[in-house]
Structure formats: C-alpha cells, structure tokens
Length: 60
Image 1 (cartoon, rainbow, N blue to C red):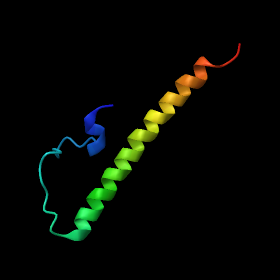
Image 2 (image 1 turned 180 degrees about the vertical axis):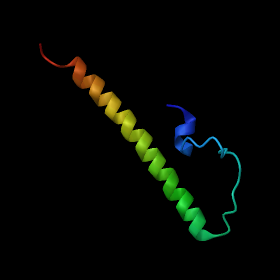
Image 3 (image 1 turned 135 degrees about the vertical axis):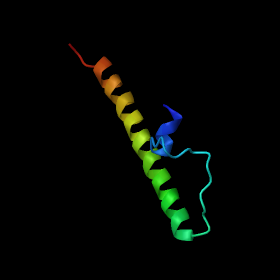
Image 4 (image 1 turned 45 degrees about the horizontal axis):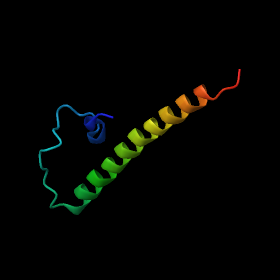
C-alpha cells in the first residue's frame, strides 16, 4: 500500500507541509478527510484480500 494514498493522492500538496490549524473547523475537516482516505484504502485492501481468498477456495 503506497503512503500517498493516505494523503488523498494530491501531488500539489505534500504531506509534510504544515497548514494553519488555529481554526478548529479546519483541523476537524482535515482529521475527517484523513479518516475517509484511510477507510477507503483499508476497504480496498480488505476487498482485495477477500477476493483473492475466495478465488483460491472455489470448488471446481
């Protein structure tokens, strides 16, 4: 799993740059966006895991 997936695959924004989080709403939005990206990546990974597992266990 590539690290950039957790940062929304945005090439124009580097994950190591700090944004101004003095605004609480902006901080909450960034946290929620991070969780959404994590869930998306994790969901795809879990689907891949189970799809390959089911393909290997199909009786012929």
